[in-house]
Image 1 (cartoon, rainbow, N blue to C red):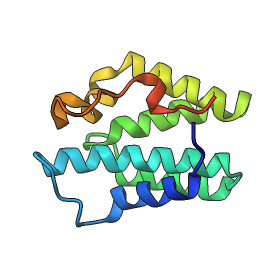
Image 2: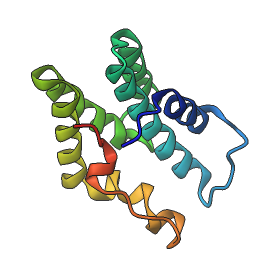
Image 3: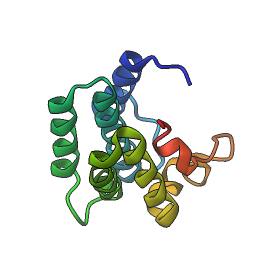
Image 4: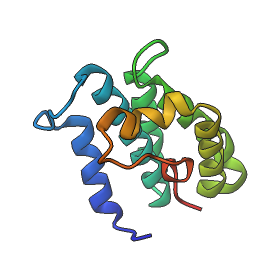
Length: 134
């Protein structure tokens, strides 16, 4: 896997805050899910880059922006699973927990990112895609 983390952070940031990305069928739902997932991945990349404070701030932003009952909250729960496992074995343990959460909750985590929402020309997201770092 290519490791251009700086570009990844720029791309994730665009998903969260660039208002010109407007090609949505259901903007409220899709933007929330994509932005929440982008925040999750931003936090993980921050951990990989040993920016622990920035990672925690991003996890906090994710939780604050998507409280229970809102669209995107499934990715807060994904982040909680990651964070619970992270102390035991770092990013690889966190990713394993996030992948398990995705397997256990595919309709909330995987489906909103795949072809069922964005059309058959887009690939489906697998649990491995959710957090690919081992």
